[in-house]
Image 1 (cartoon, helix red, strand yellow):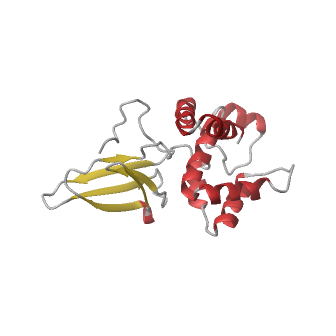
Image 2 (image 1 turned 60 degrees about the horizontal axis):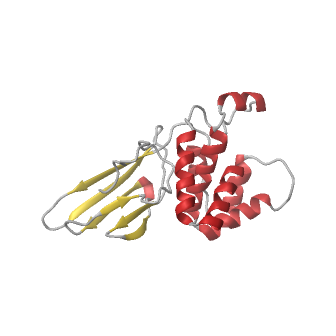
Image 3 (image 1 turned 180 degrees about the vertical axis):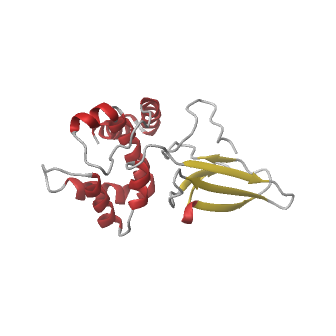
Length: 203
């Protein structure tokens, strides 16, 4: 939370571009060695040794993706519910309950993938060319095949759209020659190469 609070302050004071640069810089600083919130109880010392910086930087990115999933209004409402009682011990389940209360729907799948497991989900993208129109297929894959209906942002010919992913899949018809960028503003925490020439874009 502290690291994402820093990012939010940058967004407020320096704007969206500086915020995105800051978040992209954090993406290089964690390695997914262990789950951030394993279900088996463990000591603070063990967590510090095994999880390390992931708790800070992957934690910030998890909140960043949660913000995309919920939208700003519900995201900040959930954080208010989570922190409103004041000083107390809180858990990952407490945050999941706050999200459920604020949004009216369960996000257990989100917390299971991002906090209970180390490996990140992958987004498979396929584009089928056809003279009458192209088809773009999106599919989330997760190491244990858990349903992962995370919506995906696309930029289609310069316009950003939100693609819902029921069952972790979606299919979109496109005009021939349409330019598509996948997650152009890097809102999604997923397994993608950490290099400037992002192979997902343009697609």
